[in-house]
Length: 468
Ligand code: TRP
Image (cartoon, rainbow, N blue to C red; front, side, top):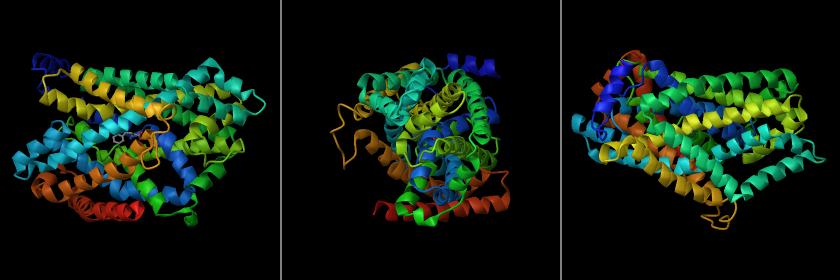
């Protein structure tokens, strides 16, 4: 089967989607989707927004967003992708023709394409930080800073120096984009699958080791667990709820049709509901484990969890400097972070490349290079917004913060809202039922209710309150 599909794709017109271009199994699809979901969002962003928003109450709201809005929208995306069977944009066109509704729903795909550009350009810069810190850990810079009189200041300086260096930031970003382009250019089976097969197990293995380490060596595991799971609702406001909702979309990779693209390569007979639950469950597990790995180490070093984006790049290295075997732990941690980021970046580029492959004369390689190149250019803008272009402000934000806010707080929830409405109301009932065969009438009723009422109302409410 595998060699068969390869011959098919090699023989076919490079502009047309290869007929045998499917994940080799349902498990591979789940691995790929988990690889997409698990990334900087879980390890860099989740712990710091938990820290900034007071811990337990925020985590609770986040978990509700995942269960009531995230899982249904994720199911809807995979469903729509599989039913369309092509790039997200074209899938909406194919479904419109087949099911007799407006082709204007392609707008969701276009919004998703825009989102891919915006997300990847800042995401790749942060993934570059992870690579830089991997280099620092291996090269002994972290232990050197750890030996300074004032460790906190030395680590702060290290991070500030990185951010102040256009060459270092653009360099890291360039390496990340190059690897991403290389993997995506090699195709679903030849590139994405091959990479994901070792990346995702690797991510889980390292993370499990880190949690074990934090639980046994830090002595502060209990305090970390209390911080994350004992809700203090006085720390909660609508802003925080908007952050939690936006992050639920970001961390599950939903709202920009990336999961639609992955779903398009899923076998027709693979069950959707349980796949979505498995993906969301594993993603949530990683986020919680990341918190349980990071906070104990941070607390044990007597540091505060509310350090913002610097949490894993400043606070955590300070803590690493303090612990036995810190260099090894730091190396493993940043390796883990970089790999997790790369298994996500490929899923952001994939939908764009598929569309270009279908609609232009570009080969997959050419499409990956051109779209990746354009994103690389925009990413340079993000990298420079930390230093030479820092004065260029948009509503009081630099370009990096603007793109982060615009995507997480606005475009992803908007995309998710539209997808929920699309699958909840526009796709014919029999089509949705056919795709969901296997979840049973009760499961179907629950999902439909979540898609039609809970998700749209939830997203709309948070929008209205959060943005005012
Ligand atoms: N989910 C990834 C993370 O948490 C990021 C990501 C990958 C993403 N693909 C996406 C976010 C698509 C939004 C949309 O790091």
